Length: 122
Image (cartoon, rainbow, N blue to C red; front, side):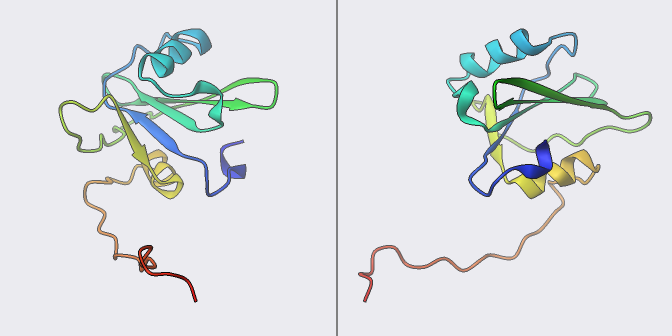
């Protein structure tokens, strides 16, 4: 399911609270209203207003799959966003931390090396 995703899989988190009574069709409509491709295989994450519930919608072979989790105590942390963002991209490991209750705003990552794309390959 979620763990079997590739490095190319993107994670999109809604920056607005979502009514957790929404099911497959309601959440799919929110994804499409955000201008994202529902059938891309990416993960779409939605938090409740109280942030004690999360739903993850994804397209798998032949249909939509929905993962949900409810915290008995505490809240999932909301990632800091700009006011104009409706969906925020996360790394797959950040989703795992979010689901484990880690405050992503407090996580500090070291900068990873990336090759200079402007140089010609020799």
